Image 1 (spheres, rainbow, N blue to C red):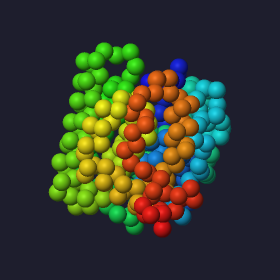
Image 2 (image 1 turned 90 degrees about the vertical axis):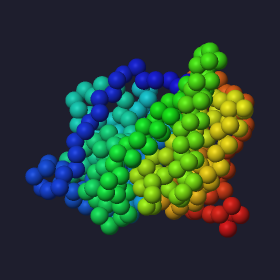
Image 3 (image 1 turned 120 degrees about the horizontal axis):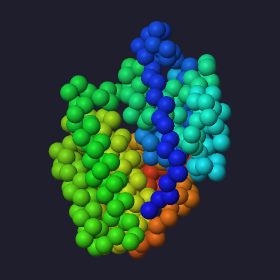
Image 4 (image 1 turned 45 degrees about the horizontal axis):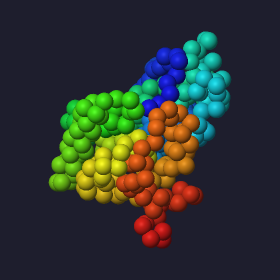
Length: 291
């Protein structure tokens, strides 16, 4: 469905530490995030950054929605990559957590960046990783990756036989059914309130509706919509001030059409969530009436 880079891009994976002896101590105003509004990993990081209230502690540089280098990377990130890895093979991809003091990259690995935001800078924000929840957060992450993203890609891939497409759709519907059941007793996917799992689930649902839907037939999309708690939850989080303002629908569409190599299907016309009723162009969160 999507074009892939001809290179395997090595991940730069240093970590923010507890103290000055770590190499990268948790010093406010030292580090910077470089995020593209169309990238799902960047969206997860941006939402988490806002939930933790880190706007004045760790600044964000917003990149172009569509990478502008010939190799699929961002030209603006090339100096950082070149200073961090000599003759870096592959594109200068986002997300990036960089060190303004040294001009080098700390990490390009989304899970590490998210953990360091929470553990090293998030003491004043909500507890996104409550005690005893790690296994459940990891399980929901696998459900998003395998049961939603990968299954939806397979279900919408052109040139596969009907049995394979049906199996992929069945896996996607099982994942949505699991979420529907979880949301039957709580406003969030984990008991106890908003967590990191909600961020990952919400981004997966955004991608399902704004990207994967373009390659599914209408019958499949109607079956996907038949999970009322899931999509009410998605709309509710879109109205949250840490979620909705980061949702740039035009950027997602630009990125998708720039990278997509698949054929559009009838499901593209069946919109699941009217995301635009919650976010204006200026990023303000609004209600369904636009007030």
